[in-house]
Image (cartoon, rainbow, N blue to C red):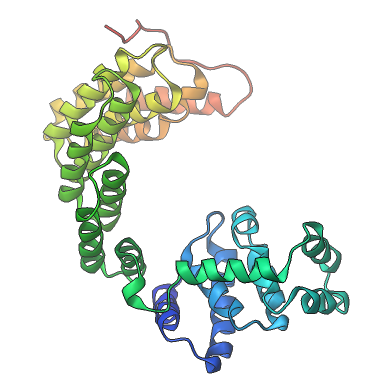
Length: 344
């Protein structure tokens, strides 16, 4: 589903954060309703500031009758049930809210009352929560974190502004693994792949783990993906070999998730190869990795394997992968013929 108004709606919410007025109440109710509908129809998991900001700005008006809007927002999904705080409902006062719920015929009446009274919530606790929300969503733009500006700019589809905010934020932080991961991921999400590759190489260079380790391999696999997406076949191929070498020395290699990521890259690199010969070498290496592996592992890589075989018009491998995929969808074991342990 595509919400053509999502960016514009968030832009209005962001502006309202810095210019709060009593007359904004009807608009805030409408915006929370629209955000809730968007989540109900398009967001099956997760909770982002586009919903929590709308909820907070409305909750600040402390209107008891808005508890139903907040309750609907809270019950969109498992994630909103956990992350959209019950205190959104209680800013009009706990006693007044409980009285309004008791007087209603809402189908969730008893459930809401149970949630309100179960943990002995207090108005002081609700007020302390509101103060925390005010710190998270400051009214003065000067108090906003640069990283937050970067995320908000991305939601508004302002790619270059978002890049500049995030790189400026990172420049003021220690070059730790967490800082570099945040910077790399954000740049990649924005489509600045060359810069993301450079940041990931820096993250690998400062990694304190031994050269042959699962952590180093994980970082190398991230680099492979970035270089593949950037069209850097030679660099991606070299990073893939380094990742496999790192994993080969890890006890009990291969780990399921890491192995799936590794083998996927063999097949995903096929269309990026500069010629058919290089593509066929990758397809053959990926095919060797598949042999003798438990079926629960293989299922995670068959779609890219089939796509790679189709790209090279290798009907034999494509047929074998499709047959295996059909077998895995049926009861009973299914495995590729066994090959030698890939470790040296």
